[in-house]
Length: 520
Image (cartoon, rainbow, N blue to C red; front, top):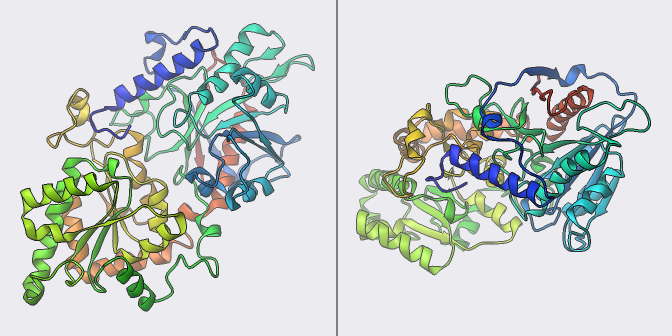
């Protein structure tokens, strides 16, 4: 997904092949042939969280993932999500495929906020046995929080429904209402959070949950929607949920820096000058493509030239001794650092090498705390910051992101080579998340339509102090009230989609509609 040379069309075909493999693991043939996969516009229904009818019976929701562990971002992001479900209307069941019991605080928070937490062992049970164990809990909806992001067993578990439908007449199709007590209704299947793209099958999964920035709806000029087989739930602000507001900044955690003196001390620890403007990208280095890196260095060079024009006495000082702007990246081995330094020396001159600073991978709290040393976060266009984007914005760090005004121009990129000459498209979902985060944080003027404007914005952040401080202040005021960090509001909107799913009478011959959730 993160390789720029993999087009949206090709990524969707790869997902379809994974779905076919999951069906084949049960001895099933993928019946969604080429003609079936030709895009046909789905009907849409609109729901409002403030107009939900009361349910006579609780809707039973099952969330399944191998990533309910304190080591994984999923548990960190969703640790306080489940507690906001309306327990008078919903019953929440969590199924962990983790290989061992985890007593970390994230998992404890999840366990305390659900009606049932169950460990399931993929090593002791087959995918069908795992699925049947969940079906025993009479779930209405199963939310797959992994997709293809991890082991293939998740897709095989979800594909088990197809085999049950074929072999057992006592199970009705997903979405059918029970005709009488003799027919058991199989759950509706939803893909969410774990896999940033189409799951490639409307037979295994009925819905994926996204928003109208990452996937523009039907008839969009970009042609993105047609590459998603499944029906979609469109969340009203940002599809990407987090628990930052209730987790970070607690008394004594030290994550949010108390004052400028503390910030200067922490900067000193990392070799950063007290007044230097710091461009930061602590995303995984494999998200950085050559074209983007060169854009960063060009902007950095311009910003440093502006600085040295005013502070000529500092020109010969190293990065720690000069207040000139720097680029702070995450280190991924000595070879990675050497390669980037060599490129900068060769193409931009030896003086620019001092503008690079590298940080080691750290544990989560230190990672979050040191973000306070930076001034602006640089999003990686090919594969945006997701969790890290939330981290930066919540801590008041403005983020610059790319969202091209048109993606049709990228269609000739499908078979291109991953090199600096390729234009980075932003039609794949993973390359559109930054824009969605910024919109929900109410600072979407930091989303730029091309790399030229992205580069100009980098320079402007460093040299136009008044403008940049106004951006930071607006973000600071937005964080406590923006939809991006209002987890309870996000859950209420999700529940609206679940109520709509439960109320529908759909099967494979009566396609599920796209659900647009509104939040007036």
